[in-house]
Image (cartoon, rainbow, N blue to C red):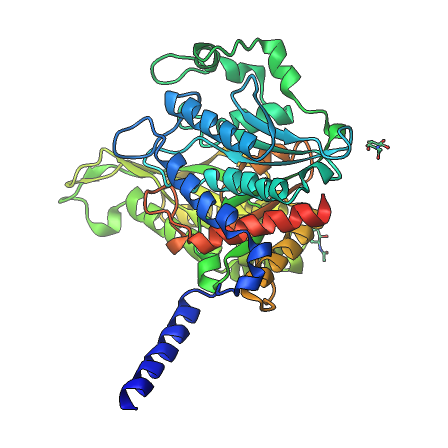
Length: 472
Ligand SMILES: *[C@@H]1O[C@H](CO)[C@@H](O)[C@H](O)[C@H]1NC(C)=O
Ligand SMILES: *[C@@H]1O[C@H](CO)[C@@H](O)[C@H](O)[C@H]1NC(C)=O
Ligand SMILES: [Zn+2]
């Protein structure tokens, strides 16, 4: 009796723990709508397999048109064909798989992500979006619904998003969106090989005219969706496998140069210094304060209103990632310090307001410290908002997927901003875009420690499936 009740207790405890550990317990009668073999087991196996296709020994690296990228493209092509898609590789090395459905001339849904990686990458960044799309279509093939899609669906594995080889992001998606300048083809990598050469080495003979022909006719496209790992900690923090992306943040990069009076560390009294290093330190701390609490700095005046301030409070992020000083010696008060600022926000007007306020405050500090300051604006990219309809459709699809898995009604699906750039940014020049983020462990990305739970891979696949079943 004592033994059996303790076994029962252990069993209850175990089932309690396993329910907590994996919120996705499901009963056998739901297996037929959950497709675990395709959406979970096979998808995870394929992610692992693709993660081994590398140009480097011992770590993952695939750059534009490298041998490993070509091998990865071939593998993806096989998987696309296995899902019943017609495949081809275009003049920019993008791999396509398409099914026409009931009406080949209806506007197509494009689903994509990138097949290239950073150096020493994780296996989910990019690949997850490609594989979940292929898996969802494979389910439709297995249930006989692939030919009954109301519009064509095309999966695209983009050849270059990270830009490691040519320092140029979005070679693949920008070409399809028609926003890649012809000059991009003549950019060369570290060993002097140009984009044109890299393509020709792989028997892709692209001429400048064929670049223009790559552009999709906007009238032939219905929209673009992308599934991607979050690359940040928010979903894990709120305890959700999926989130809908509100938009991709706009970005400004500044270079700040602070000049003071170079001198001997031992002989110049503290009261007589014009030290650009301590000034830079104060400026950096100011930047942090402003970006943490924009409401304390910006007022409801002509330049900003309530909604701008709200969106800034939730999305503004600022980083000083690089700093250098001259002459950089331990016994010398520096003559000059430069540092970079990376500032991102979802609201372009808000970003301008912050930049205006930042430079005001910055020059005040420089004046107070009698150093001279120059702020140079090095790079600007406007925010891209995801389409409201696509976002709400992706939201219902995620909701349906999680409900199918858990049998429970979920709370609101989180809506988050993307601080990182994605192919969807380039594709937004062609068509409306929507994005779904998938939780990743610790928010870690661009690292071999990048990890997505098998169940979350599954949830993402189910969400794409639910989207296709309902809206396509
Ligand atoms: C197919 O789509 C085109 C373009 O939207 C439309 O004009 C045509 O009527 C559709 N054909 C059928 C049979 O629905
Ligand atoms: C706030 O300002 C932004 C940009 O200037 C504008 O788009 C928005 O409509 C304004 N909102 C309100 C509530 O006035
Ligand atoms: Zn990515």
